[in-house]
Length: 193
Image 1 (tube, helix red, strand yellow):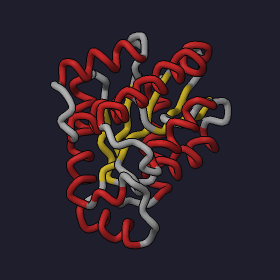
Image 2: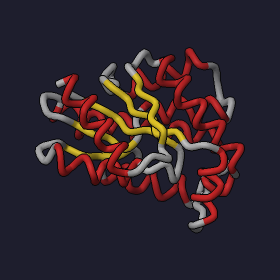
Image 3: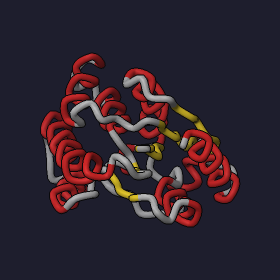
């Protein structure tokens, strides 16, 4: 089973994936972008502002998604795969940047994944107040530097993108304790296996 943990920066995706390893030690954990050697390079270029073109950014993310699917998802499709981000993020970020229409974004991401989208998505949702607090506690990368309203728009777009991709989605209050969130996700995964 292939599942993805989604959420805006600081929502706790990485923390949850680390916690889930305790309950699913046999699971393959990965991330987009950055789950492959090519992905590491793409992630670095995008997060450090190397690109001026939003279309170039979208196409690089799609290239990473295609490589990630071919290298990691398909060879392990019979295992539990837990990914930090997925095509849902790809569609959501491009929606907010108004690069092209939603049908095109769905088609491009379906092509990049060869139709192998996550079977379940967990979206960690932050309130505006909690997001502002978490951002105040860290140094910002290029995406975080775009501001709170931008990130909240992404958060809404993640939910819309997940529905557009027709993936079963669970929206989880990310202000809960780490343990409560992990327990909720664990129970939902176990119930689906």
